[in-house]
Length: 158
Ligand SMILES: Nc1ncnc2c1ncn2[C@@H]1O[C@H](COP(=O)(O)OP(=O)(O)OP(=O)(O)O)[C@@H](O)[C@H]1O
Ligand SMILES: [Mg+2]
Image (cartoon, rainbow, N blue to C red; front, side, top):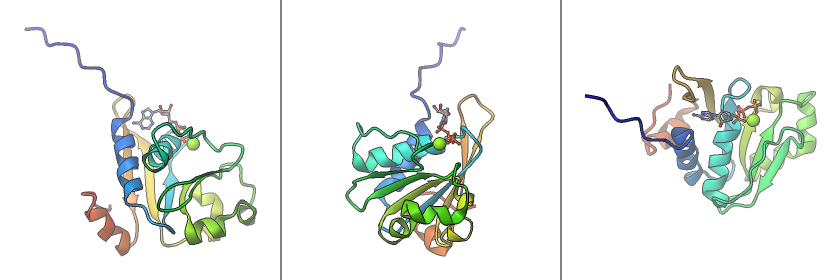
């Protein structure tokens, strides 16, 4: 018997679902550190997160050159950072990281660039390519508060 061809699937379904699920439970002051090599899907995850809160038609470009993009959203302004080109951690102050961490919801690509300015209380999402074409692994790490919050999402911390 010949099996039918696989159904076409929308791209990165789990990335979009995971980003959306985290977004809907986000609170002002939350910091999400999005780790992973070039092209592992940090911006794709941030895009799903922003669209879940700011609307599905929101344009979410990569902040490659602007380093930060802001979005009005209900629980708080979303600050999407891409710090790959940040020359030194102190330069992040000019981007408004203190306001972002105090009252915004922060999504940070290349969080290591922040050095000592990276908040300790954060959820780290480490992305890497999976074995199958187009698949991704996400490993979540965070403190006890995040472990409790993620239980309600049905996810566990590594
Ligand atoms: N499962 C998946 N999750 C996320 N992205 C995926 C997935 N499968 C394929 N992709 C593709 O991988 C690419 C990820 O690009 P993206 O810009 O999000 O990466 P990035 O980690 O932000 O890279 P950079 O370090 O350059 O900012 C996109 O072209 C996206 O369509
Ligand atoms: Mg990116």
